Every structure is written in C-alpha cells, then in structure tokens.
Image (cartoon, rainbow, N blue to C red; front, side, top):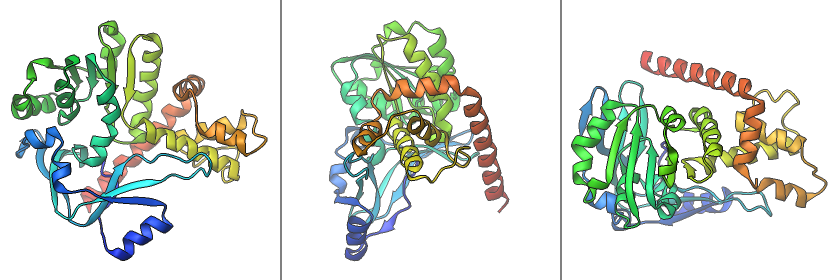
Length: 327
C-alpha cells in the first residue's frame, strides 16, 4: 500500500510538483499526525508470528513527500488534484508485513487514516469488518459511543494471534471488539447480515487483488439492501474506470481492449454504450452515478474476462516476486 516513494522536498521540487504536476502539498507536523488517537495510544513493538511481522518501522523521512489522501476529480477539466504531505520530522509508523511474500498488508499513516475517515464517521450500531490488519478501523469505531459492537473477520490465524496478544489489550473499549477466523466472503454468503448496520471490506492490497472480492461483495450487497456496505480503495477503482473513459474518448484504445485493465475496459464499455454528443455528456458520464450498479451489471456479463485477467495478474506477480527473491 505504499503509495509513493519518498521524495526529498526542496523549494524547487515543491514548486515543480505543485505547478506542473497538478498537486497540492501541505505541511503536517508530527504532533498533528500523532494526535490521531490510535497512533497516540496504541504501541506497536516488533513481533513476528510465522513470517508475519508488526512493528513501528514504516519510515517516512523528514522533508519527504508522501500521498496524503485520495484525489478528487474536477469534472469541468477532467483533471485530478493530487494531495501530498511532508513533515519536517522523520516519522516511524506502524506496519504489518508478510516476510514470506514481501507484501505490506497495512500501515497506519496519513493516506490510510484519511482513506477510512468517511466510513468511520458514518458507521454506527453493529459493524462488521472484513480484514483485521493492525486493527486501526476497529479501534476507531470502538471509541464511538454510537457503535455497539465491532466484529472482525480474518482468514489468517497468525494475524489474529498478533492482534489479540499485542494490540487488542491496548484498546480502552476492547469489550466491544470480537474477531473470528474464517473466510470473509464465505461468511457474508452464509451469515444473517441483517444483524449488522455497516459492513466494510478491506481484504486486498491493490486494484488487481481487489477485483474478485469487490465484485463478489457487490453481489452480496444487492441481496442485503438494509445493510450499508463500504469498500476500501473504491475511490481509486473509480479513478481507473474514469481513466478508461478518457482513453476511449481520446482514441488510445482499440476495439479489442487489449492492454487495458479491467476497470479501464469498463470505462471503454461505458463510452461505447452511452450517447456522448458533447462535452456535457462526457462530464456527466465521468461522474459515474450509480457506480456500484454499473460495475455489478458489467461484471455479471463478463465474469470470464475478470477471472482470466485476475489469473494473468497473479501469475505476473508471482514471476516478479520469484525474480526479486532470486536476485
């Protein structure tokens, strides 16, 4: 989930990033970052369990530039305004890493914190979380007086053990939190979801890893209209569909759609099946109203394409990791 390699900040490259790369860079103090109640109160000393490691070794060097939050799009210009931050102090932040696969599963840093802000603010009652990570969302929800319970589903017992032994005891309202070792999507398929008010899915690292569980989640959501669902990284997925729309309109993708990601193919499909006669029509399409319905409808007609794409991505990632390990 590391969004951007750190870049040392100077007056010159700050001005360049702001003006020519359409970014907005803000200075955030260490005190502001650690005013977050999780970072202020939950310590994450190094611990390893069967190759899974939690520690506070996510280093963001002083005066380096890192992603701050998801980028909203201006539908008049179609451009996005990227927001980054820098801090004058070096930051050491919690991280969960799989040493066997070289995957970072979670960090508690400004981008992650901001990506969950809307869900944490909205959620109330009984909440179900798919994916434990470092327990950040569970902690923040348990602090809310209008949240009655937080159930976490995770299929990795090693993560659960680290969470139960190292992190959960530090939660002031730990009695609100429970955790179950099982497959998240299978749980959603078989459980009575009416007892939950909000459900959040966070069981992926990036968009290729996200596709199948996201689409499966949408199918389950449709069967449970009384429950409010949330998906980590959904705004980033929406960005990719918008990129596909712009590529199709610009004529940079051919009819075969080869070379496009699944979200970009969906964007191209929307262009091909939508009446676009002027700039206003394109602006309205780019807003992707009823986004989840559009995604689910496309998926139900193209499941084989998704399965093939995901399989190729998995094989590619395995070859990359094998090369890195060999090197």
